[in-house]
Image (cartoon, rainbow, N blue to C red; front, side, top):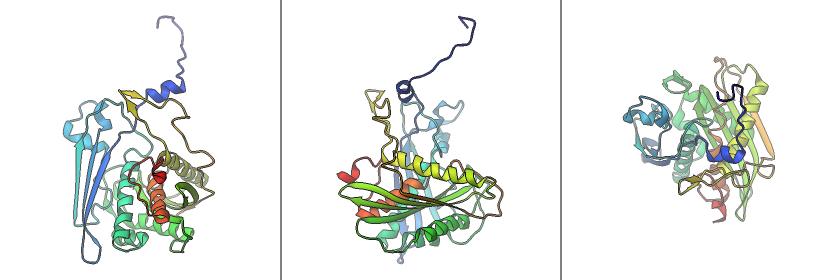
Amino acid sequence: MAVKRPVKLQWTREDDLKHDFYRPCGLHRLRASLDDRGRLTGWRHQLASPSKYYRRPNVEADKMWEAELYPDDPPRRLLPNVQLQYYSMQSGVPRGSWRAPAHYANAFAVQSFLDELAHRTGQDPLAYQLALLGESRELPYEQHGGPVFDPGRLAGVLKLAAKKAGWGKSLPNGRGRGIAGHFTFGGYAAYVVDVTVDGGELRIDRVVGAIDCGLAVNPNGVIAQMESGVHDGISTALRLEITLERGRVQQDNFHNYQLAGLRDAPRIVETYIVDSPHPPSGVGEPPISPLAPALTNAIFAASGQRIRDLPIGDQLKA
């Protein structure tokens, strides 16, 4: 307005990294009750996080949870007893959305916990999930991608990814295979990840993904979204974090905010699209959420070490 002509403002990468809207942190606590055969009978999911809704006008304090927890996510309506609890944290960090909003964090917590329960009860993780999901049916779903959620379609992508990846076949010592799936924005996605863990060093050998997004109008675009979900998810799971010291963001460029590179990329990436009769749905958000839990479940299968905090960082070397 002062110079009476357009002005171009271009932020440096350092300014951009230090002055952004960051995905809220969160602490999840999950508990479950089991019957004498190891089957789930009850579920409690507690989350403490600073809501990203703090910037929205006229959002009441008791509604802040709606950006952080999605009540209709599994295992809602799949179990007789489910309880969700949210604890609102206060934070001065600017917060906003990120690819798959809260689904990335919630899928990591839920899918990791299901894998732990399967191993604790001596059951196959895939079979454990399929028993929970059951047959195809439409359940009410009021969040992103509703109005219905079909657990049979989620089971379908889990089974497809597992079949193509050779689930159930034995692997040599030091190698492991993990599986995870999730539903969001109307799309159902699952991954099977193969890894090698050797002396604290991680190598991602293979990622096999399956997606049911209804009618795939542009299959090449769907494959591209799945592949980007793999690499975006690997970046986030391995090293991407924002830390603060005395109120200042410490990361300022790619030397200390390290995206995944060629050394991190899977040797093999495969994508399979379900030939679905349903209308087209989302493919931008669904592919990223199951990646991290499939990866960390594979790390456990290879090394016996559970990863419960993201990013993974140097935890395997500890």
